[in-house]
Length: 116
Length: 117
Image 1 (cartoon, rainbow over the protein chains, first blue to last red):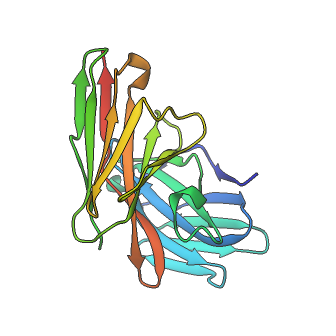
Image 2 (image 1 turned 90 degrees about the vertical axis):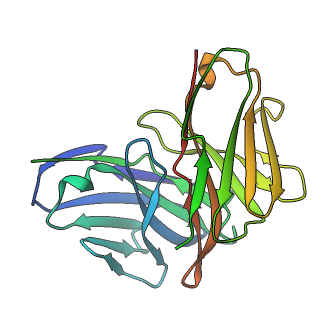
């Protein structure tokens, strides 16, 4: 059964600090991994997408890494801002799904709170 | 980038009434769209796949007569929650696929919060 596990479940850090969120997956065959940011009461917004051959990808202060051998990914947030407070969802796509949502496995997300 | 909108953003209704939620792809066409529901602090759960010009396909455990889906055009899908009950209260999100670079990715709508009294 395809699964995506995220840790920690929730995290509180002070504004300006860095943090790293983890995602472990057992999805086969693997196609790609995406990190989404979901603000409270809003739909998810894509941050990064990585395929099997990509080890790291950045989007501003967000840097995602992928180790396809250990089936682990991380999302590093640098110099956090109050607006970073949100849920961060790791989504893994199974190969052959053609990008359809029926081939996606969602993590439960990490709820991040940035305190001033 | 691709934009998906939903309407309404929130709705409160009485038990027993029906509620229609619209999902639109604003700057691209989508032959398929997807509907999810999300409970507080939980992950998105795929409910059904909306197919333009044909019947929707539902995930196991989702009542098709309860959640009516119509994909009227290449830019519009609607989800109707029929005879809504308090347990249908949830956050409903749609998505549509589009290319991001060379990868097809899902673009999500902003969600619709439904409260059934």
